Length: 121
Image 1 (cartoon, one colour):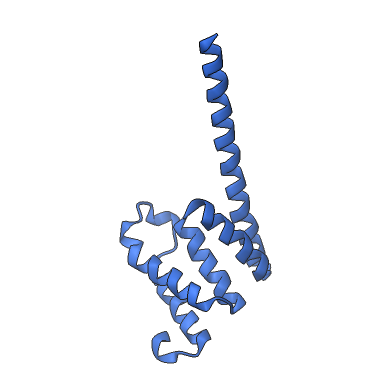
Image 2 (cartoon, rainbow, N blue to C red):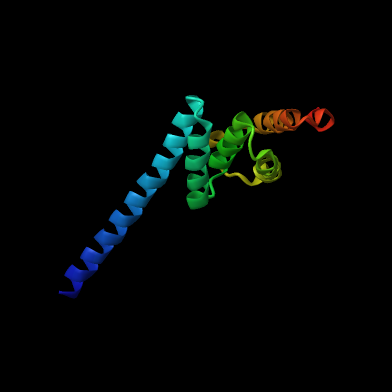
């Protein structure tokens, strides 16, 4: 009986973890789809939720891009890209995240959007 309960509990935990993972990926996919369709408010909402749940570097990078394209929360976009650049050396799977050159380029675009051409250089 104890073995049976243990197995049921393990299955329940595994199922719950798996479904949460699917939910978080749905936020990311919805955000990326919205970003590609230039629906920036939806992209921001979805990617913020994804980042809140996962603290994923690529999700943060994409959220910064959504802020940039929407022209909103540019200070948050700056913080995202500066933190991304600062922490890039610590990323274990660099092939799964955008490179440093892209982060610097987007940071420059954010400063340009803010009208700070000196920092945009």
